[in-house]
Length: 468
Image 1 (cartoon, rainbow, N blue to C red):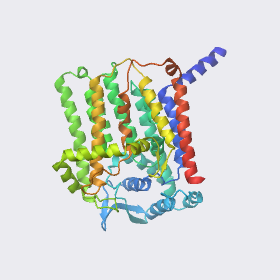
Image 2: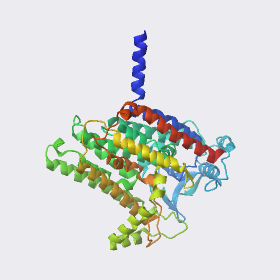
Image 3: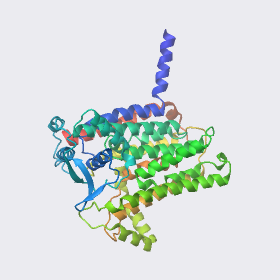
Image 4: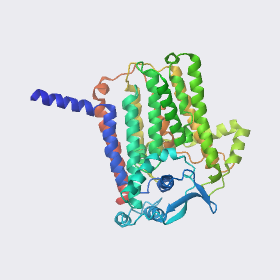
């Protein structure tokens, strides 16, 4: 009997100390805590994302313009519920969330027939791809007769499930940096966003999974390339770029896959060109589709994307200087909003947590090994190019849509925009030389303790902001 118990205990230990399971355990626990702890509609842009998800759930894929505003027809109960939930809390730290609203609003019937036009300029132009989880959640909520408030929780829950499934799968299949990725995908910002109705949950998850697929094909010698694998790559990349067009360069990771895994160099390059072309074409197609309903969502300044694009094309080097200067000027802000941004731009974890997280994840990146493989200088140059290219694409998109015409800096950049490509940055630190025996023997314990500390602080920060 003792031997059986020890064997079962050993199996449990191995189960809990695998990186994907450790991630799933902590991400599930803290994700559910944040889902219910964070008041509904109080994650940045969550109401507008929910409006867009509801619009898609009704079968309207492309939004509409009505009386000079872009948005869609939404049940009045959905609009009223979100407005009452937000109230005067945004940017007012002295205002706390009234928990009585939950009891009151849960009794308000959805009443789908009573619809009003709602403007949500910033999310109406998003493709439906990143809203699949929320839409499924809304359908499930409607099936059981949930109120508008209940639908928000249903959307949040399914959104979180999709992220957990994608991120878990990514950690399971990547041959390198399993613990690093698990840690990186459990930062306060990531957990907070993925437990909401925001598109970030699916976008983060699909980009993480896509990166893992490329790493598996590149560095796992036992994995061969066949046509099903190629079809899968096309599908994942298209889903990623349609979730957010800022990640249109992610398919360039195809170049880290050894050419020897293909029948000929010609087939290798043909597939690469088709992959890049398909993703760019998908982004261009959707952008052209929603251009008639695009509206500036900044009320404080005048923006003109067409004019801004002319300025960029007329003087690309001048714009490049503007973009670089913007990053150099606000790099501390981007650092903080990468690791510790919560809700709108008015709530962050303590600054020491962001430094702590960066130090720990850097240590993981240096010491975490995986398979006995080598990431070449060429591979790392591809990672660098995708990171730098993504930073440039983000700058262009925000210069077009969020910055005044002719501005001398790019406005609106946030650190969380780089979470989907962050694994590539830390892969630059991957090596087979630097080792620390204690880390290798106690990596699971280090992971559980360090992640729990940061997310416990996050829970306290949210609790104090909204309830204390």
